[in-house]
Structures are given as structure tokens and as C-alpha cells.
Length: 454
Image 1: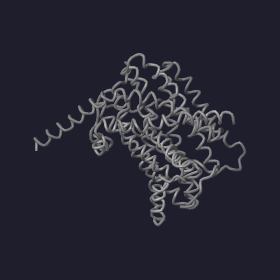
Image 2: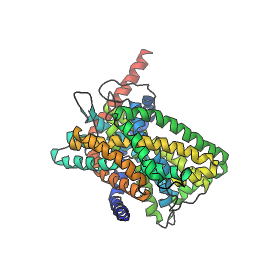
Image 3: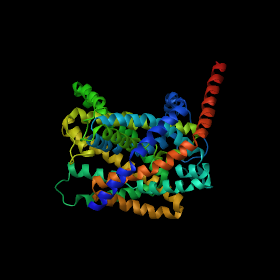
Image 4: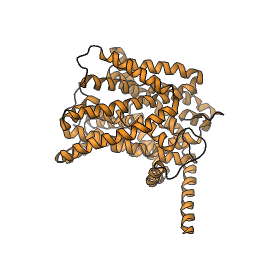
């Protein structure tokens, strides 16, 4: 196990080098400037779409709302609870600032990737929709770029495995309730594998239905708990926020890594939080029922707002307000649990446990769809049952594996998915601008028509 830990640690370190950082930030800035920041102006309209004010008819498997909640179930939760805690451990409070920067650029990135996924998706005779970066490359780029589609699908198949989710659910459950039970991880892993099998075999619609129920409910519970903490400890709020900005540019920040370590950690954990630039969101958003590709792009771009700018910030504030020091033993979800205990007493970790459990499972279900979509592209439908079996076994396997191994596996695969996603998106950016301008023009014409009818 130690050799495996070391291998993925080194691989993740190399994969997340400066070229990856520059590509992520540079691409996000490029998309925002290329679109003249127009998508940002339609944020409130995007929220109206989610509220059902502008329903869509046509081909697709899930609604706008279910596509977003399914995607958010893969980002809101452990990415915001364990991921933020890991960011503060490895990069200090300043890493949170760079998570924000990644999210702001990620808004534009998600608009572009989701629009392309909806534009270049494939619809089977039975109504099944296949979408994602691999289909964007296959149907939108020259044939000699096809190896990048297989590259994305291969690493997407690996990234879809429930590494962090299974590990963190077991860690917090064992820490709170079953620390005295020997080999608890084996028992928990078996139970989690059984639950996972029941849901993922039902396919995308069952996954989307579960996510549409769990994500809003858990978000409200988590928001409420955090706001109670802030109200009861309001005097600690300003110092906590100040430390984020101060440490973001402090060369002595974090675990002796300096400013570069802070920035790299923030970007990496920001991507883990909202997955902008990775291409995972395109796998689901491309399947949504929509009247226009850019319309789904608007829905997708709200993701980083929910999961990073809101959820991650709330988690970071609780951790920083609590004063709990991150250590090698409590990094990840345990750091957040300790912080909740300090701020809310014994009920704090129980609330967090319930949230982590539900979010963790919904994330596992969503990731199973990501991996399955990639397997279907690589091997056809015949490969799906085999992958689902491997996935269920992986739930058990990562339950007994360590946190470091889990997070390095995901980091490695995510980094390798970024290159085909952003290269293809940059290549086809003019197509996105064309579709976006067409859609925004149609919205203005609709507004003029309404005014003329008054």
C-alpha cells in the first residue's frame, strides 16, 4: 500500500505542475474575454431557468434542474467539506482565496464545456443520450484528434471510481461512532457497496432523481448549521475572512510551502470542488433536455457559484473560526468535524455526519455515471456491467484504503482529463461564441416582443 501511495503522490505532483495550472487559469480567462463576459450578465436568467421559468422541450434524458443537481452532487459535499479542509491543511487559509479565483474563471469554463457537450452529443434511436468531452472531440474536431477523446475517456473511467467519497464516509463514521470496533472499515465498505449497487444499476434517471432529492435538502441543512455558527460566534467572522486574504499573498503561509504552494493548493482543490475544466459536468449536462446548447451552458455555469463561492467559503469560515489546527491526523473531513464540534458542541459532528453521508453517497452515484459514460465510449454497452461490478468492488476497496491514496488517485486522473477537455474547448470556442450570440439575440428579441405586446 505504501508503494501505491508513493506512486500516485508522485504522479499527482507531476500532473499538477505549472503547465496544468497555467492551462486552467489561462483557459478560464480566455473563455471569459472571448465571450466578452456575456454569460456572467445572464446569471440571474440562469437561476430563472433552474426555477422552471423557461422550460425546455425536445431530446434529452433529464431536466435542467436534475442535470445541475446531479452534477452538484459530485461537487457539493465532499469537495466542499473534505476538499476545503485539505486545502487549508496543505495550503493554509490563503488557499481558499485561490479556490475563489478558480471558481470565477470556472464559471466561463463551464459555460463553454457544457454548451459544446449539448451541441455535439449523440442521441440513440431509443432516446438514450451520449455526451461529454469525448463526443465533442469525436464530432467536432478533425479525426487525428480522436486519441484525445480516448485519453479523456480512459482517465474519466479512473476518476469515476469512488476514491475520496468511500474513504471519507468511513473515516467520519468510524471516528464518531465505531472507533472501538476492529475492522469497521470492512463492514462499512460492504454495506456501502450494497447500497451503491442498488442505485447505480438503475442508470442516470435514478441517479438524477436521488440527487434532486438529496442535494437541496442537504444544502439547506448545511447552510442552516453554518449560519447558526456564524451568528453565535460573529466576533470571529472578520478575523477568519481577513486571514484568507492576508495568507493568500503571504510567503510564509501554510505548511512551509510559500506563496507558490498556497496558489497551487488553492487551484487544485478548487478544481476538485467545482471540477471546472475537468469535463465531468459535460457528461451530464449534455444529456439534459434543452431547446438550445447555450441554454444548458447557462445552467452549468451556476455550479461553481453554489459549490465553491458559497459552500466552500462557508466550510472554510467554520474551520477558521473554530481555531482547530490542521494536522496529519485530522486533515480532510475530520478537520471539518472537529471544527463543528468546537463551534456547536456534540451535535455539530452529528449534523456534519448526516450531511457527509448523504452527500458522499450522492457523489458516489454521480461518479458512477461519469465512469460508465466513459466506459460506454471506450467499449460500448457491453463494458458497462463489468465496470459497474468493478465500481462496486472499488467502493469496498477504497473504504479500507487510506485518505492519501484516495485523494492522489483522483488528483492524478482529474489532471489528465483537463488537457483533452480544455484543448478541445479552446479549439471550438468560436462555435460556442456563435451559439451564445445566437441564443442571447433570441432572448433580446423575446423581450422586445413582450414590450410591443404591452
